[in-house]
Amino acid sequence: MTLPPLSIMGRLKDLLRANTRSLLQSDRLDRFLGRLITLLENLRNRIRTVEMELEEIEEERVLLLKAAESTEKQAKEARAQGRNEEAESLEEQTLRFRQRYEAFDEIYRRIKAQVETLRMKYRELEEIRKTAQTRMAPDFDLDAKFDALEREIAENAVEDELQELKKRLEQEK
Image (cartoon, rainbow, N blue to C red; front, side):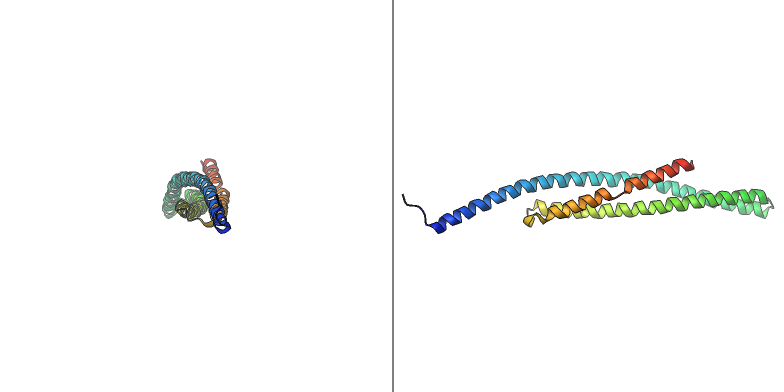
């Protein structure tokens, strides 16, 4: 039996190496997709939770603003009727309501901005997932991008902001 020429053996070795590398990359890609899908689900749940909390905060903001407007109107009426002490008391209440509203509004805006950031990261992760699923991820440069996004999402302190706001709410009540 004669052996095939060396050039054919070399090509067979290269083909075998390429297939082995392809199988390893496929396994790596499957693990990567598993991590990515888990992160996407967690992020989606996190965004939903924060959005529900934001709705509650928005309701509280509206109530504070209405209370401030109401006490301001009552203060003007009391002043017009010559009840200065009552008017001063109502004006102080109005001031407190407005200050609370402004504090809530500031926190609300920060949390809303963070939620938008999380949504943007979610869209980026979805793009990575789509690219990875089509198996067009050359040399897994997506791994580094994925890890960076995962860190950014973990560092997003939206839950801390919510806890701070809840504490303020409880203290004010």
